[in-house]
Amino acid sequence: MKKPRKHRDQPLSCDWKKPPALIVGKFPPSATRLLTYKGNFAWKGVRKEQYKAGGEEWCGIVRKTLIGNRGESAKFHLRYFEIAPNGCSSYEVHKHEHVVIGIRGRGICVVGKKQYSIGYLDTLYIKSGEPHQLRNTTRMPFGFFCIVNARRDRPKIIRNELTPS
Image (cartoon, rainbow, N blue to C red):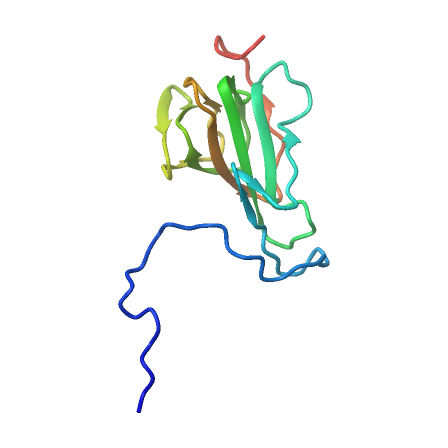
């Protein structure tokens, strides 16, 4: 006699909650590892970093590097950025591409002369050589994942009328 399958009649769900810690310990940089989500857009072992040096061309933005600064051999980096109300990234141009995925709140991405409104799970591809800036014009934080090549050129800052002075 066959044993009945567990959970067979339960519907699939996309509602994801923090999983239990499956593996505990420190691993070498090249090891497979889980970055456990702690809630409030924070991951265990991932520190908040300054967006970039300086600060005259941007305001109210922080970065958290999930994949890319722990010795991974991946050809991409995955970062989470969060822009405070009325904050913005630098208005910049570079040769590498971006993929931006909205994950918290709403924001605007200015790409050349176009503006794109980004909300939850909206995904924006920014091609090489496109001047761009991400902004938060709302009263809530705007958070997004950004995927870039691991090997990439440095951005060139562009000043415009909306760049903080």
